[in-house]
Image (tube, rainbow, N blue to C red; front, side):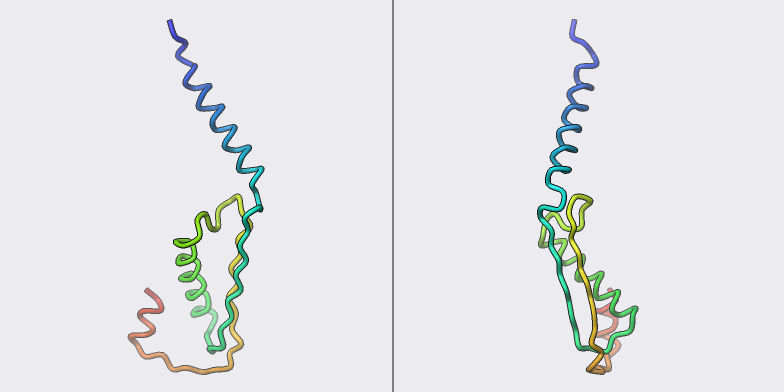
Length: 95
């Protein structure tokens, strides 16, 4: 008669191996992105731009921003150019 706990020990072993592999690879595939714009954006617009870029990069680079890598995304502005966004541009920016 087969032991009913065999499947449980197999799952536990697989989880342990997966965890060890993650620990081995921690920080080996890091991506650092520094985004600099010259638009005069307030802190909310800068955060929104950062969030949108973060999602877009996450769709391209896999894995990105996981608990096993050291991915960073910095977003900064020199605030040199003042640009008056039209309403439709602001809506696109915040959607």
